[in-house]
Image (cartoon, rainbow, N blue to C red):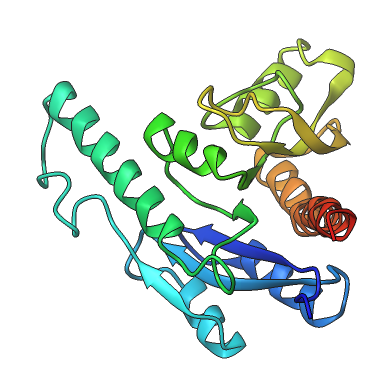
Length: 231
């Protein structure tokens, strides 16, 4: 008898883990059917996401660029920094792919507040095994790639240069070009006259939890449907 169709999810987080918690809660409520989070990986030792994982009974692991010996603390040489990142990426991909293929290796990786940019040494071997990787970014597709996206959109709004006076958030597939992968789901958010940057940030963050849940449910559903079609 074949095992039931299921989407296994691996979550990466760096901090508080509120987006991770949103996924945990959605799974518990049945809003992401036929799916489960098999593991959490963090790259910051004090990430509160690990406490959330323990409360939910989800295994977690800490794996850090410096603490695990890939990069010397205080290193400034660009060549050595890139070499360290390449080795860390490759080792992390190897770690993911070493997970049991039938019980724990993910079909989907969700970057939920993961404060690190993956390069080809992680993404290529993961993609080769058919594992999808998604990320949440606080901007619309093709706008404000990279860091400080909300700040830059707000500055453009104040200067009268923000297109249609709208910014937004998206969940997108992760590729080597930062924040440029194909969008999974997009939500527009209109900027308001007289609103502070902090107020805009708060409104944008208030939409993040629902969007990351909806996008994860969408892709998990597609993965499960594909598994069922192959049986």
